[in-house]
Length: 203
Figure 1 (cartoon, rainbow, N blue to C red):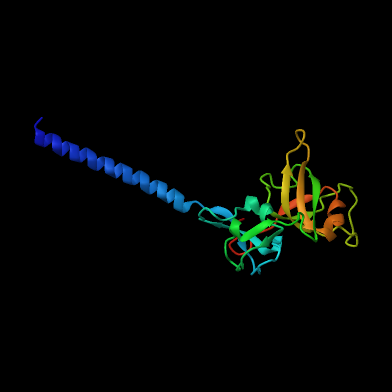
Figure 2 (spheres, rainbow, N blue to C red; figure 1 turned 135 degrees about the vertical axis):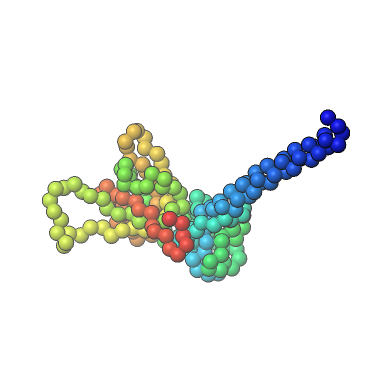
């Protein structure tokens, strides 16, 4: 094989290698661009010095860079004083809130519920905004419209503990308004429902 032919073959193989590398690189970039994370965004303006509350935040799915608060860490920012003015629609960053003041924050309490299998989404996790509802009593007798059933209690999940035995209940801890604690604890066979999306919130 002559030197000229070897050089031509070398250029061909180099060209093929460049095509393969470019294709792999494009695939990796496409995957990165297409990746979306569940992060926290402000629902309203929050002034400096105010304690961050569950109603101040919602969840969105975005292709976010590092430096924003993921939904799984919502419990770590609630109850903290805001260090800079926060604007509705902006993604929340960890440095925008100070150290925890007190947890639970004033006016809120944590309540732990024994949630039976099937009464909550299997993927339920910390940071989810939920409604706690009474489950079926299984009493057999039809309830009349006049029967008083506890109203739903809204809150934020702060902990989920696996069952101690197979088929047993999970212990779900929810941050709720203190005034709603009694109502939540009086529910029989409580159900936990993740609140629906608002706007472009994640499902």
